[in-house]
Length: 99
Image (cartoon, rainbow, N blue to C red; front, side, top):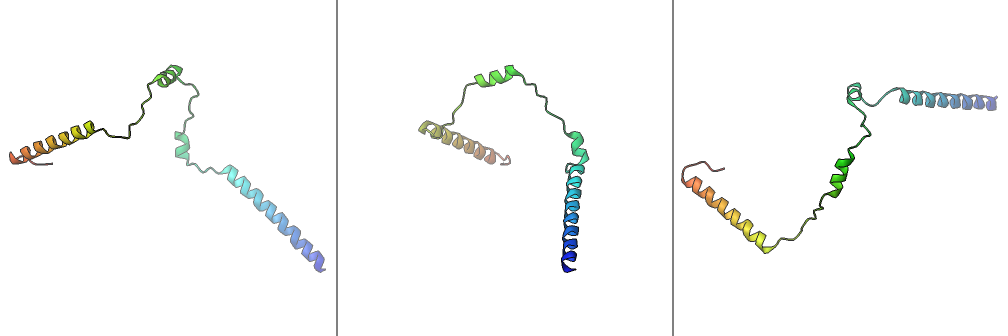
């Protein structure tokens, strides 16, 4: 009798697990993770492209960044800073509000 009871429990458990997995698969297939308001707003992208625009983009001159500063740029930058501070001082001495 023990062997028969064990076999009954084993088969019943197997059937229960198979049904459980089946219902989970069905539930995941039926329910959506995207809210309905968002799914209404989603529109497919049209597969047509303006080939002339793509060609003109490909013909553009490529710009490469310069990672080194030359001494001329540093001097002109400090001159601009000095003139900005001079204008600020003049505005403050004339009674205008400073930023």
